[in-house]
Length: 537
Image (cartoon, rainbow, N blue to C red; front, side, top):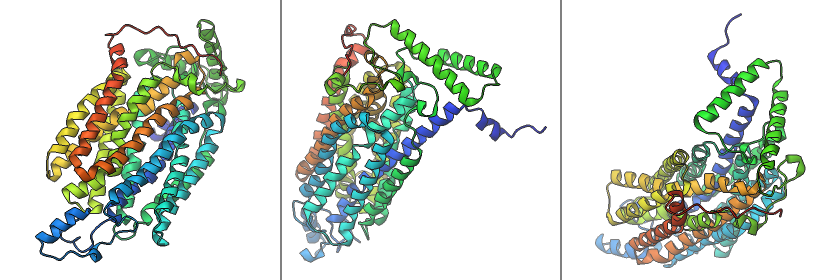
């Protein structure tokens, strides 16, 4: 008999459990990539909604004041007819109007997030995500159709943004809960650091798609992402598996109050399980999953008997009771990380929505090149998210990792703002560096930290808390995400340096709010007595 090819041996070396986990990880990655892909076009299209067409071959201008100066220097008479703006963004206060579009989306997102987490615990994750993605695809497409049907009503675009912000809240609590169900705490920072790169990948793809159409038909910059999101909603409906027990596979450590095994301990345990499975090779894969499930249930029960925490049903069949909003707030660390994320996300989303406009205004790039360069910030975000996850896994200090990155981000932002008219190479380096330091803490808090707190030992294995905790943390952060672009729109007419000062102050507040947890992790403050045993809600 001929030996099996290496590729086939590699594929068959994975267990059924591992295949399902990998599939879920990839699928949820693609689903949330699609969500972010549909958010990015507005930041790219902004520069096309207010621009001077007569000077595009000489220099791109995006503000009324700069146009007057350049027209005088070039010896050309000023005429309002040379502006190919899209009404109602043809006024001198166009930055405030564009800021209102951002604010309407992000404010609705922030408010809706609190409700979304509660709904997500009580509804099917698969159906909830499918509804959200189909709706988001519809509203994103409707925004782009305003170009084809010559719609110039500010009210129309704001209503679309509000509706889209509300339905987009279905995404984050759902995918984090799904990943929390499938993956335990071991190496969670690394896994979620890599997985969370979907945010930056979505931003990059959204920028490239929007940038391709922005110069000649900006409506397609919204229609194409809208179609992609809707298609991914259909894939979600057909393939998403919410929980390991839905396919009769093992319970995750997130549901067990027992201590997580990392490093050599985890490796030895996996080796023992593998050797046992080899000796029991007559057991079919489905029976193996059921046996593991029974062992995990017995282990979970024995651990529960040895703990003083109140147990909320932790078996799938017992229908665990969803935790209340106030109950989630009592989990240690939720309030501190939520407030820290408010300011961290303020900085991140200001870059997300205003970076292309900043590059166009200050460095005089055209709309497409500004959009393409802005993707480097997201490349840095991928690096920062993975780096934060690896460091926090190694040190087991999530708050300290976030604090150090926030501390380094402030001077980096200052350097970026003070260097005037930088060369292309300097811009590339600064964008990647800022992206890593700004998005690193943001990525760590919204993924690994949220999952850690949502499976805190005081919950005694109740997985129903994860969606609510995630929604509280990300919802509070979304308040900052709404304020950042709004403040940028109000402050930018006074000078871009003032916008960066605002971002540095926000970064400092994020660091200070996390300081208490940092000192506790470094054992400068004494350990806190756990008085957060939760009652059934």
